Image (tube, rainbow, N blue to C red):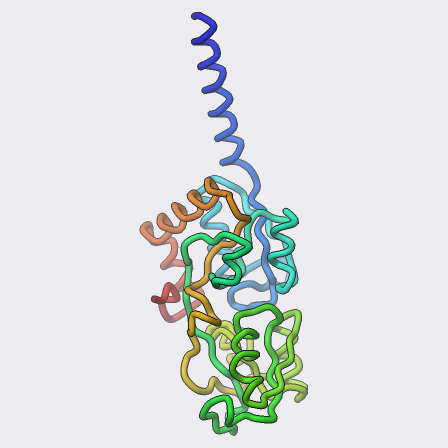
Amino acid sequence: MNMSQKTILSLSTWMLASSLAWAQAELKVAIDPTYEPFTFKTPDGKPAGFDVDIANALCEKMKRKCVFVEQVWDSMIPGLQAKKYDVIISSMSITAERQKVVDFSDKYYNTPSKVVLKNTVKYSGPASIKGLKIGVLKGSTQEKYALGELKPAGVSVVAYEAQDQVYLDIKSGRLDGTVADVLEVTGGFLSKPEGKDFAVAGEPLSMPKYFGTGVGVAMRKGQKDLKTAVNAAIKTIRSDGTYKKLNDKYFQIDVWGN
C-alpha cells in the first residue's frame, strides 16, 4: 500500500467515524411544556405530548438521542441562536419573519387557530368584542394576529409567557378569552372543567401573513446536513405508519393539514 492509498484509507475511516459519531450523538430539542396536548409534563415531570413523540420518532429514524430542554416560548429562537439546543420541536409555525433568522424543516402538522370566548358572547368579528380583554402567548402567531386584527378594533390584548397562564387568568376572570390553536385550546382548556363556559368563536384562522404555512422543526441557519436528515425522517414517519399512530394517539382528525 503506497502513501496515497494510506491517505485515502485514513480519510475514509475518519469520514465513517465522523458520520457514526453524528448519527449517535444527542440532539438537544427545545420545548415549551405548557402547550397541551402538543407539549406538557407528566405528573412525574417527564416531557410528553405530540411534539415530544414526533421528536423522539425523528430522532429514532436519524439514530440520534433526543434530549429535551425546557424553554420559555418568547426566548425560543434566541436560545437556538445561542446554541443552547440544536432544534426547536415545539409547535413553531413556519413564518416569513422567522425564516429570516432560522431555517425550518418541511412541515409536520398544520392546524388553524380560533378565538375563544364565553359561550354567551355573540361573536361576529373583531369589532363585536370591542372592550374585551384577550390573552395570548407572547411571541406567538396568535399574538401577531391579535395585534394585527383585534387590537385595532378596540380589543385589549395581553401577552403571557406561557399559554397555561392565559387559561389561569381566564378562569380567575381577569381575561375574557384567548386566541389559540384549536386543538391546543381544546386539549388544554375547553375539555377541562374550567373551560365549560367557553367555546371557540368565528371562522378558523389560518392567514399565512400571521400563521405561516404549517409547523416545522426550527434550526440554525446553514445546517444543511441536519435539515436534510430531519426532512428525510419526516418523510419516513409519514410513509411507515409512525405518524398516523402518533396522530391518532392525540387527535381525532388528521393534523397534517393542507
